[in-house]
Amino acid sequence: MSLSIIILAAGQGTRMYSDKPKVLHQLAGKSLLEHVHHTASMLETRGIHVVYGYGGDQLIEDLSHLAVDWVEQHEQLGTGHAVKQALPNIPDKDLVLVLYGDVPLITVDTLTELIEAAGKSKFSLLTSLVDEPGGYGRIVRDDNNEVVRIVEEKDATNDEKKICEINTGMMAVNSKALKQWVEKLESDNVQNEYYLTDVINMAVKEGLKINTVQPHSVVEIRGVNDRAQLSEMERYYQLIQAHQLMRRGITIMDPVRFDLRGDLEIDSDCVIDINVILEGRLKIGRGVHIGANCIIKDSVIDDDVVILPNSVIENSVIGKSCRIGPFARIRPESVLNENVHVGNFVEIKKSIIGNKSKINHLSYIGDSEIGTETNIGAGTITCNYDGANKHKTIIGDNVFVGSDVQLVAPVSVSSGATIAAGTTITKDVAENELAISRTPQKSVPDWKRPEKK
Ligand code: UD1
Ligand code: CA
Image 1: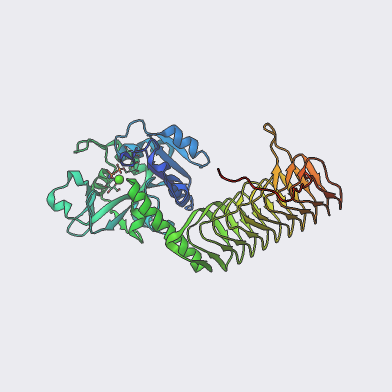
Image 2: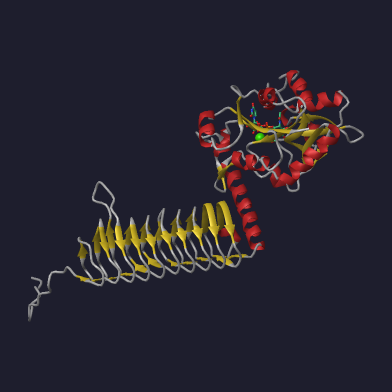
């Protein structure tokens, strides 16, 4: 028996007060739907079908990278109606697993148990015992403690409302039977909706036993309905990620002030100080220290790198034992080889910096190639932009660039050259040459300062 998964995602999410469909809102840098899809795709499945409605164009555009069958539900007539839209694409002999696109933290372990439970009875349901069941559908059981039906809160009697076992909405059902049942659904209830939950009683009437499974943790079944719930879930998820990293040998100074919004591959003995944000795809080596308030996105950081506080690194490669910051900004397509030092208020963009070179203070290096063991003095600017086009600056090995130098690109400075402080370079500099462009200093002896009248 193959598994087909239906993810319900047609709801607008009114309480988000957003133009964007609810399932596109992000948790730890990924949309809610991507979280569910990621978990679903860890199961061995024939296909994943996403039922969408509100904001469909935006949804399909933003998530076009997901391998799913997009199924439109023109009008949101209820969960039963939603599932019905996806069923024609699913073979009769499959087991159908129903998930919700706005319940992002469901785990593979729980779903695997749910699927196994369905193997025995052809119908399994994920339920949960909670202290405050308000708002959820309640699981009604008979004297033998078997599930007989689900009653929605709005249709429940006062006695039924006291039931603390709730429907999470997730279930695994035989496809052929489900197809027959959804055809028979009626909307004669308080909300005038086609309830998927009504199939439970249909199954029971046909003599099926509903197997119930409980999640390992209640957060797995928690849905996102408003932005407060979204932020609670974000903090919970971040804490889980921080603890996973700590268990793998990473020191996190304060796990409640840590944010990983993406995929991180990291070796042990790294230290991450407070308020660090790691985004996108990251690969971090061994023994890396990341200071407070750093933001690192889509980058590769090699072993023993030290990143001092308040530095921002994006889409770059940082070689072994480099030292960056505080207050450094490494912009996309930069490559720092080994042992490079980049200090405070230095911006580097689309540049390659050779081993042991230093750019320690207040500089802008853009569209440049710098060799090994070169020193760039404070306040050096590569003038890479002429107002229309960008040009390159090439600097060789063992070059000494004094403070307050402008390099007007395109220009190249060969190895061993020295550039005097305050120089504006507009012509190429040859090997081992000294280049200097300065108005000679004048002296006026016994200068009388003007006095206030
Ligand atoms: C549903 C269940 C309820 C359960 C609760 C768990 C039914 C009738 N009720 O109630 O027993 O306790 O979930 O959270 O199933 N959706 C569509 N199309 C629709 C309607 C809904 O795709 O026409 C999607 C929503 O986007 C959402 C999910 O289905 O992801 C659940 O819909 P929602 O309206 O939140 O269901 P509840 O009324 O909360
Ligand atoms: Ca809901």
